[in-house]
Structure formats: C-alpha cells, structure tokens
Length: 247
Image 1 (cartoon, rainbow, N blue to C red):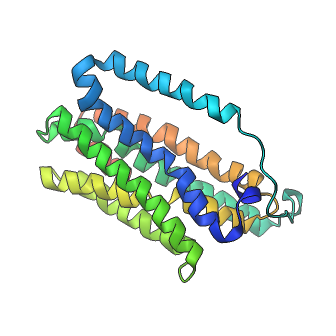
Image 2 (image 1 turned 120 degrees about the horizontal axis):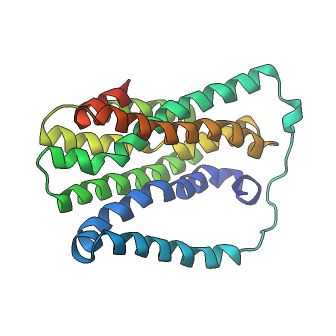
C-alpha cells in the first residue's frame, strides 16, 4: 500500500514511520510498568492494552483506499534466479537479526532486575530504548530519501551497532547493560523500515510478494529467537541469553 500510495521521494520516511510502530510497543510496555502494572496491577495493564487495540481498529476499519500515485512493473513471475536468491538471503538476514533484537526486548526488564535495577526504572530503560528505536527508524528513513547513502549500508551499520549493544548487555555491570539496551533496542533496531524500502526498489512491481518472502524470515526469527533465549536463560541468567543472541 505504501509503495502504491506514497511518492517515491518519500518512501524511506513512510516506511520508517510505519515500522516505528513496532518499537513503540516496547515504549508503551515499558511505560505501563511503573504507571499501571505497579499501581493497578498486571491484569489491568493487559486489559488496558487490549482496549486500546480495539479502539485503534475502529479508524483502521473505516480507512478507504487512496488514489494510486505510482505504477507497477515487473511482476513476481518474471523474477530471475539472482533476484530470488537475494530475497532469500535477506530473509535469512532478518531472521537472525530479528531473533536477536526481539530477544533483547523480551528479556530487557528481567536482565535489568538481575543487575539490581528496580522494576520501575527497568521499565523506563525499555521505554527509552524503544523510543530511541522508533526515532531511529524515522530519521534514517528520511536520510535515505535525501540520497547520498544507501539503505543497505545503513542496514549493515545498524546490525553492527545491535551486535555491540548485545555484547555490552552480556557484561555483568549495570552501566554496560543500560548502554547495551539503548544500542541494541534503540539505534541497532533501526533497520526494518530500510529493509522494506530496499525491497520496494528491488521488486518495484511485486513488492507484496517480495515482502512476503523476506518477512517470512523476520517472523521466524521473531518467534524462535525469544524461545531459544528463554531456554538458554532457564539454567543460567540473562547473560547466557544475550550471548546466544550475539552469536
């Protein structure tokens, strides 16, 4: 929908804004710990999120299709072997990257508690990291639109920063953990919007099909990553989980 309704010169920013919704969930979850969970209880926190989700469905359901701005070319049936291989490779990349960073988000609060940080501040750390992640996606999306730097190079940089952040989270000190969360969940999680942007340029006439291939890898990683991290955490502590995520 974005590819067909948004001018090409603004697609990077559009994808960044759209994908910023994902870390915003971490922001909401982190803020809900001191504001709701610790005051009204965890049940009320979950109920509030469910109510807000239902309210969002109302304007979404009333949205109408906008006029098409861009045309389409080169359907999926005309992809060559090189294109398919590139999409599968990107799917593998997002599988490992997504699995690592979603594991960091899922266990960020638990890890903070192990470092001696109280529950409320631990939630704030997750919230700040998630807010930084959302802002990063929007900013670098706009940077790509202005040209001068490729989406792929920014994706690679973000993944390196994420790996550095995960490595810092594995160090048994409070400061390294906090900085690591901000790097991994914040700056290092800025790549998803750029991945969508890159796919839209790789397969301009079949963005939906190409996105389906790459996102399959993303969601496999998002599902399996936290589970494997949880298994690693069972006999040890959060350092084992984040060390596995770095790998």
